[in-house]
Image (tube, rainbow, N blue to C red):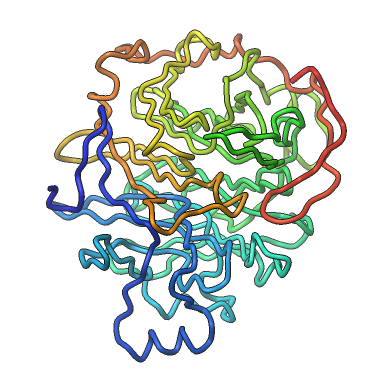
Amino acid sequence: MSVFGLKFCWGDLDVVYQWKSVDFEFPNDGIRENYLNTGEYVPGTYALPLDVDVWYKGNERSVFLTFPKFFKGIPTTLGKISSNHHNGSHLVQAYPDWSWHSQTNCDGLISVFRTQIDKCDRLWAVDSGVVDLTLPTRRRQCSPKLMAFNLNNGHLIVKHVFPETLLKEDSLLTNLAIDISDASSNGCSDTFVYVSDTMGYSLLVLDLKRNKSWKITKNSMYPYPPHGMFNTNGIEFELMDGILGMALGPGDNNDKTLFYHSLASLRESSVPTSIIKNEQNFLTTNMAISKQFQTSKEARNYQSAGQAFDKNGILYFGMVDNTLNCWNHRKPYVKENLHELIKDDVNLRFSSGLKVIDNPNEGEEVWMVTNKFEKVMVGQQNPSEYNYRVLKGNVNELLKNSKCKQEQIITFPMKNFHNENKVTHGRPSQSSGYGYHHNNRQNNNY
């Protein structure tokens, strides 16, 4: 038993927390009754944890989860795991507190997909504003926004509402990457945030210092029609999601590489951050700029959601075949260099969130949340079995027998990627439900 929670070992991953269904900790019965009376809390509703984030402060550890509003009756969309239990699993508290979680208050948190904690002790949350994601009543309740909280006191320190001119009717903001040029106490304002619009097939960029955002749309941000059909754990479903997985690769403060991929895709794309941080590059069509967006020549075997780099340039990513994998960015992005670290058909069923966290006492750790999302898509979740898990593994332990490990850091070999403009993408034509897009056009180049 761990001092922080459960600790069951499978290979090099520990199951730290697990739930059959997630329940929440209210500060008092009055607040709980209010959420029950308004219908914002319906006990037993599938509150699906989609992302995990971790903050170490001294000897204390805080673990955060996101709960997008896939169903009615989910009381909080951003939570912190409590030390208290119910039915053998940890309860979840609202973060920063319950006053931020009302579906009728657009100044609060509505439907958060993912978070990112940065070196400045800020927790960033991308709020899609979209509720009832799997239901016929799906709607944009509030404008999409980006918010950041000071983890030392829970105070809101950044709020940016994205202009409607950057959005489509079906826009769904789902992920983010934080790019800080100077992480000193005086330099935290020199931050760019990259946000994926999975249903708008675009990347939104926020320049925090200017409080200005802009939109980038490229072919590689669309779903690839042949890979919109998923087959995982014997369940088939369609999900034509565009850009979703994102990770910042190694580099200096002024220029890193953003790696990204669509969920309905087997390929990885990349672009230098110096390109996307300059709004002027996207005011008009510029083929020289477009050629800076590269796409891998080879493909993964399966679709992937979350991914993250460690400090040595190793990329970790889950795939829908219940595996955790790695790629050393010094090597070509080809199948022989994509290494399986762990396969676990029980605990790694649909990893939707993945982070590399610096534990000051034990070194870097990979944290993952898995949620059997395939069962959600077909309405087959079983409340009598464990559906959701938070797992972690020490990076050194995960890599000890892997070919990904390598000492010297060198520049990413772009020669193994090709100019994305040579590929023609079929544009999705219909949508219904969460990220569910039909496309009758096929392109065999993918």
